[in-house]
Image (cartoon, rainbow, N blue to C red):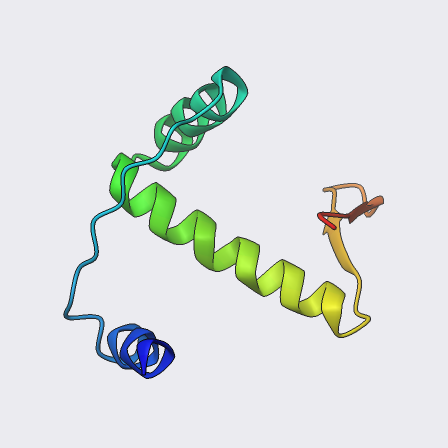
Length: 81
């Protein structure tokens, strides 16, 4: 039942769930960088980061590779798992 509730919230986007988390310094610095670069607030940054993380780990789980392509065409493989 809980997974259906989560799926419903994900689809509608109308229900908020509050979390309290503890971050290591490295994560705090990364959060600061992300909010400065994007201009988003912390909540929006976390929401987007979790979605991107889920997308990448799902792709890796399916045997896919994710790359960052530089302006010069150089490729760097992104590995999370």
